Image (cartoon, rainbow, N blue to C red):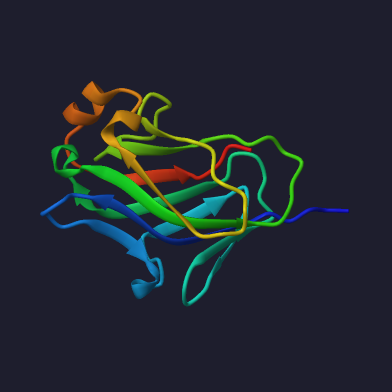
Length: 151
């Protein structure tokens, strides 16, 4: 029997404090979500719903250019339903400077998601960046790869 685990995402934001936040949500149909791999994606009026999740699910996002010094945190709201025997694992948010590709050294680390069927907000501070010096020196960026879980 195949087990389905569903992740519902209400919104994803790069928080810039008093400056303009970059928000990816249902108000524009999650237009910044340009692709998904390792899962089936459904866009509803309220959320992105990921089902049939394989190892290392990936959402590719394209936003307006963001300057690293303007970002205070990365935040998203999620809910996980269903059962799985997979181990709990954290995820990543990869970033790519303009004109560059994704690189394993350019990422934020996410702790494991809570799997209790309830909505949760996860907010990651700059300390979650693998290489803060690279983040600060990367210049403007507009492409991100959000891997909410690696299991």
